[in-house]
Image (cartoon, rainbow, N blue to C red):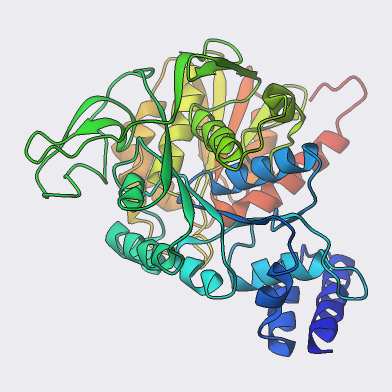
Length: 446
């Protein structure tokens, strides 16, 4: 009875949230858990196949949702927190919403994005069969602390389930550590693709002996083909390897020299997201799918290099930390069109209030001959303006709102506009862009 009441309460709370314009991805779960604290444990036992979780600093929402889309296209029914509510209440909400009115769960797989700091709490309520770890970077220092804290929390969660199978980013010297002594598979990019740089906040020192490690080549931050000349620790044997990478147009690469991937995605980092999903499907034994068709049919979550036509292309991208912004900036600079750039930063609890990371991001690289105008906005727009001043990049205007910046970009001669925002700016910015799109004059001219 408590299970049934919890499911009904969650469903009612979800409907109420939608009526007042909220996505209600966590609150229904919090209510359900107050009524039935064992709800996740009870419902997860009704799954016919099992549970696969995705953790990591960057890319976990895209990886999790792409995996969920792939499983559904392969004919499975799934439970998924696809809106990114990745703490205990968000997982509970996903399970409750997947039940019918009689409290019966009909699902094969639970496909769950899990916050790194909450993994041990979620794992106390269910038994995961598979776990993907995308990468580990510094993120929200006021919430997570240094990266060692995050790693300790994840290691504790993994240790709770000895039979858990891991799918790990073998290019990340931090994430790959979790596979030692476990059943683990590794994916990675096995050739140099990008210009080399010495920009790494994590992974400079060997995880085994603490001495400085070396790289045959790097991709970004600490990701690459690493090795320690002192103790012999090195990049593991890669089970699912990307080569023949071509970013000159649409994204192309080959997995294990056998499976060609060709998809119209933006951002080098998406190779890792795609590799993680391909690897997970193979490890799970789900191999009878047209993987390129799955990729083509997938609709990314908002703000993942999301293209919105406002008479010219405006591309909205979410970035939450130095590694995320560095990859967004790299994508911007690979676009050789004349471009405007808007950067908007808030500092709410959801974003992390410690903005010292602004000085770790490679904003200096936006100084390019194809940069037309740069605008800053958000609550911390003045911090951004100061950061760009030290980078010797002139800011065209410090805007009181993102809407103001967007309207200014509509009037310039730039061919494209990139809008780089952090979490609490994302949804309002997308709403503003869609409203501007709706109000474009006939013919689509701004």
